[in-house]
Structures are given as C-alpha cells and as structure tokens.
Length: 128
Image 1 (cartoon, rainbow, N blue to C red):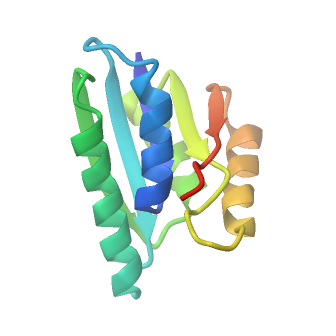
Image 2 (cartoon, helix red, strand yellow):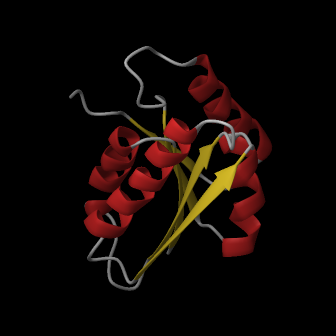
C-alpha cells in the first residue's frame, strides 16, 4: 500500500507515525510531504525536523520518502503528490501542531475531502 502523509510539525508527524505504526508492513511505502514558507526560517526548520521524525519513526515500513515543499498550501502539495506516488490513502491531522487551533489545518482537511477520490484519514494529534 502507498500512504501519502502531510505535515507541518514534529508533533503532527508523531501522531501520523502512531497511526501508521499500527497499519504498515515492510511491503508498504510512505511518502511524507511537509510544507513551509520560504520566507520563514523557523517554519522551514520545523518542516525539516518533521520529515526527520518520519524517517526515524517509520522503521518497519518498506520505504519512506520525504519531501519539503515551500510556498504551497499543504492540501495543494498533497493533491499534486497523490497521483505521482500512486497514493492509496492520504493521512493528515486536524492540527498544524501549534498550541492554538488552526483554521488553515481545517481548510486543508476540507480541501482534500472535496478534491480527491482517494481515502483521506484524519488522525487526532496526541496531547503533549
């Protein structure tokens, strides 16, 4: 199975990895896409760290690919990547990983649900 995951932070990546840990096998492939603003060094650092978490945590998966996309919305990046990786399932969280709830994250979920026929799994973010 080919999973496509979208993230912006270490916290959301950890929740996605918790979900995938229970479902993936060595025959599966996971592609993780993180997005960040090119003008925001902190956001770029957070996105790179989020991708590192996926690489470290998903050790039982056959292959893990990570990609950092700058200056694009998460939903748009996932919708673009989905056919390229032949995704069977898209995994996202309802939170950006920030302390405050994010309408941007909710918009990403809605955009995905409205724009793709691929199953979208929305996982909760574990409380820190």
